[in-house]
Image (tube, rainbow, N blue to C red):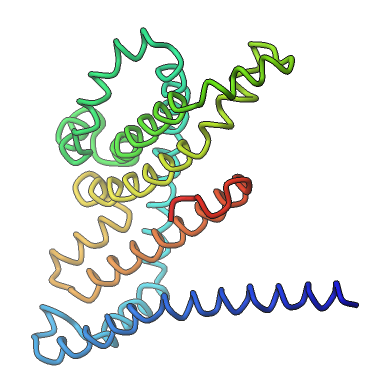
Length: 268
């Protein structure tokens, strides 16, 4: 009975913390909404529409299926470009982190490439691939590639030599060091790079859709801008931010689940 009482107390305490955390997180949004409403009363609607006008725009876009079509298009692009970046960046980062000669050869190129923003590549990418899914995927790939690559390199290079010596001392074979010691030890840094890469990829996707696509949330914003429909522009911005929040929350949950041994140390 005592164990049951302790368990219930722990669950209630945890739930209370989650509720408090959620309520604290709502405060900035409520203040922002109040400020938005107050400022919209003093400006022309084409400059800043009121919250209820934007809600009407949401309602129409949902009913017609417009918002769903553009959201699905964006999610398909981000999935393709981001997963492609992981497929190339993580193995390459492990190789560079382990092999000093590869590091010496490729590090200058890696450092130079990470300062080239995705938006700078849009003109040449559009020239090569045209306007559409392929161009957007390449731009998203570039946005995610550098953060994942650099974090993977850093994670592998930061593995303590004591971990390797301990494993070898206790009978581990060298061919197992990579999968049993090095990658698990570097995984926290790799996750940081993956999370940052996801945010960079998301922003690169919006830029790509604004300039090199005929579908997606970025295109929705540009289309509304040309039509002077500011409420649809704000609708698109809110949707982009909300989906980004959901993606980040999902990623953090997966990270905490997979890295339970470093509880409290995940990127906040």
